[in-house]
Length: 418
Image (cartoon, rainbow, N blue to C red; front, top):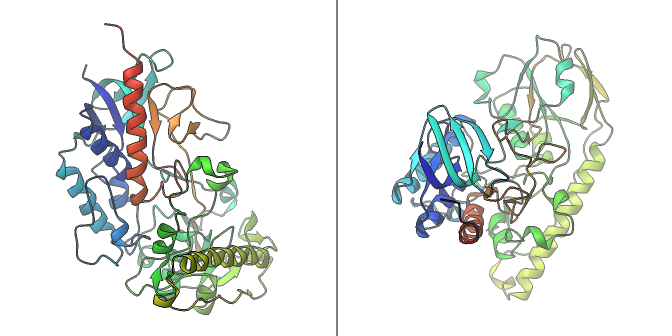
């Protein structure tokens, strides 16, 4: 039975960043990956998707963006090549095509961990769960009420408009994925209805700079989990409503409405082909507009205090979105809607983790990535795990440095019996 000091599950950016940090500390380890390096990036993303972050922000321990378009946004094949190159740069010890079947603590975990895979059994003193936050789409239960004639899918299954059945599309959810897919479908000539939920409104560029530059420069992305009043609420915040396009264009509900997308409130019920929606579209838009105004004022205050006003474009404010009257219910068949795409987020799913580490909603209980009541177990890549940027490529490095330090200290404290 092979053994290792640390075993990492997942060879995406977080698993590779942790591997690099452990390598620098000369801590022996292995990465188990169910597919290939960057598996989710290459198999669970739509064809036209690009990173929401500019290429200069793709920073990992000992590795930077390797191309020439630093202000652009990598495509999914480029992300896959970027991460594969990173793994090769330090000879990351990856065992690909290996599915983890079970992870069991020995005792409470202080004596190590037993890991079963479809390629054999492992023993490890520490385990790092780096499977990310987007493993299982969160499809609401009311989806079961749709007739079988309606094609249903999640963003991880969507590839392009031509792959969908003919007819209109109902996109449910207005975070980054929902906005981008609704935009692509409308551009292709489809009739699109977007059921709007909690969302953010944010410009791609502000005062001549990418909004990610502002979030980075003001320290917002570096805000730590122990610096906010309610981290549980912060972890439920919707993703930034951005699109990574060569034109550096912004994407919000106003843009979609101008393109002909029909907007409505959040889905409240399904009865066969009849869909009911809440009368909350205007409220949701007002909340997003208010949050945007607060954020831009913070950017302006930073620019003024840093003496940058003269070199930046003038401040501006975005007019409030005033959506047209939305229907309270509509009939999918009558409206020609043949597909429903559920861009409703993701839920945790760790059927192989056989330890008492879950809260009532199935999330791993952790304090900044250190799993509670499970000595030697860590988790990475979750929303606002240690920092606001934890789910970004740029956030993986800082989190990995912190957690590898904690892991090394744990090994110093705990010695296993001979």
